[in-house]
Length: 499
Ligand SMILES: Cc1cc2nc3c(=O)[nH]c(=O)nc-3n(C[C@H](O)[C@H](O)[C@H](O)COP(=O)(O)OP(=O)(O)OC[C@H]3O[C@@H](n4cnc5c(N)ncnc54)[C@H](O)[C@@H]3O)c2cc1C
Image (cartoon, rainbow, N blue to C red; front, top):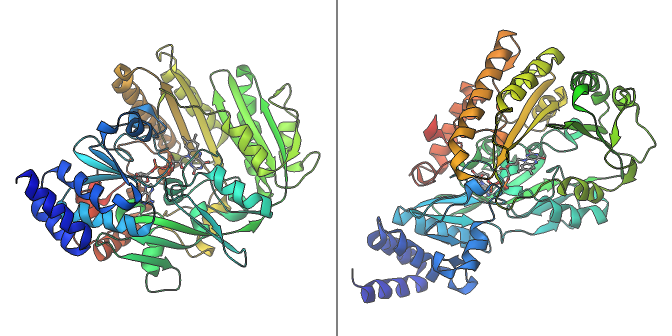
């Protein structure tokens, strides 16, 4: 097609949107540049599309992905400003048959999930970043492109909180789809169990609100585990809860205390964690274990943490203090920087058992001891209480298929800088997962669930939910995306096409 004819078509499309998408199909099929031009024109009023030729402005937006290994040069990046823009974009992408990736905060570690190379378009939701408290303050509507820091900055001064991420820089969109571990897990379950409704843009461009008690209740349930298989979520309506200040105690132990530390952690999980106001976030670093003890009440000490109070010696990372959730965000956020750092990690789950925890950490240490000198490895055995499964059921049910037993959800990752090391790091990661899975299985403690938010690229997250839940996801995807736009055109993800 000549440039002038294409321009004429594009000009016409900005005036008549439906004709536009039909024309996009006729004119752009197989031509991503043409699709980008169509998006550029259609979203001209919000200046919503950037091209690599936009230089540093484009590069800054490309580089939003947390891991440098996930930053790919999309043919263009489209940044819708509201659900209607998302609808326009998905119609154009779908009609043109152009590949795309969806990105909210970009914190996922898997290259190609929230990024795409020059064959496709990156849909960046970073402008959908508002937090709006309802008039009665019982719920807040939060855009997927928001970061938890901004969400809490809006809500905490009101004396309120939603169940969300533990680190301020992380995006809302991806964390909410993957379940979401918070500092309130014992008290409130997973983040997505606290969603009142989702606003979703479907493959045909329609904008729907799905809640437990409307005609999209099946889609609502599907989004509690079904990830990006059905549509693009443009708003999460979350229940708010009053929030008190916290007792905050951040400690570091030495490497040779690792076994004692894991015993204390197991004791906390057995006894202390039943106190719903408590949470303990552990990281085993190359220098030794660290722990963030939080109690959601301003106290001097909390009995829930007795196992750690009797574990001496330790280095205080800060003297224990009482502070708000925003103080905690300042503390945890300072630990993470991105720059040119590449990050990758995987996950697996087992029934709580201290000997197994120690054995698995030994495997991790052994496998990561020969990493390149600029690489480092972090091991995070999240203690997940029974209440996470129980509350999930009580709050309407999710698709994770969790067993009601205390369990460990692993979140381990390696950071490095040289792209030349990518394959080697990936191979080590897969070996760690395989060995840990086998060791857990040998003790009959392996659980099938895989935590989506920390899962690796070949891990079968959906299968871990069980056959019945997978069938449900397939049915909902077939109903709301009959043309399989999210299967065929979405670059990658925990998609049913990968089952
Ligand atoms: C420093 C750090 C701290 C973390 N802390 C926690 C924590 O406390 N709790 C926890 O549960 N997890 C945590 N995570 C993991 C985190 O939840 C995941 O990385 C999650 O994917 C991040 O969300 P995001 O919006 O940044 O994701 P993105 O990388 O933007 O997206 C993740 C996936 O979801 C899809 N997606 C994103 N938004 C949408 C949407 N609106 N509609 C449809 N599909 C969408 C993307 O296509 C992609 O496949 C942490 C990660 C890091 C790096």
